[in-house]
Image (cartoon, rainbow, N blue to C red; front, side):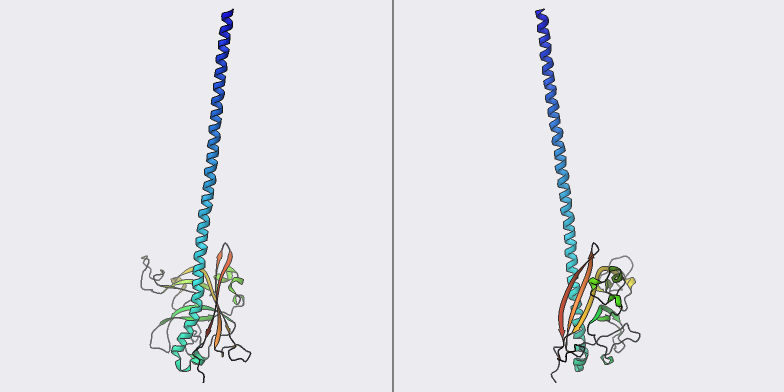
Length: 274
């Protein structure tokens, strides 16, 4: 009987140790699973954060790039008007006071190339700055590239750019396109000499360069001119010797318009004192 009790006690002890070992293994296994779940969670959170940072970085780079392009295009708008004045000075040196703000119009039914037409940049007018290759009717040069202004008269477009809808802008002269100038050179090697940008210019429409030869961009540019009352008669107009030029460039980020605006005074500082 005593031996039976001893055997039973021994068996009970073994079962107890086995149960304890099983409980320990189960606990150890549970801790390992929890650690794996936590590790996976940390990795996922880190991956999401890294993706967000990279995406944000790309967006910031794109916005910065667009701002830089827009600022340069706005500056080019001012320089384009200044170039028109300088060209008039050179071309009409003997009558520069009358012709410094002359505006050629190669798009008219009867193209205007001479200052004697009296066609001048207007007061409180909106313009698209064009760059064109067109025949000089009164010149021995067969063609030339130059900046010129095209007046905007459509009622829905005579507002600051940021107040005009994108759908209206997309079909307006304000929309800028890359115009291929070296039309005999196949810069991108695709067999078409008129669709690359080996030497190009941002412009809306250009005489001698069709839309087929152009690459649309996401930018729009507008020139607005107001004369300064330099003669003191209380009425600013084209007879004054100075103008305030506003160059606006707009592009869209996620459907919202972004604007760069530059303002400069352009004057006939070579005006004679006679």
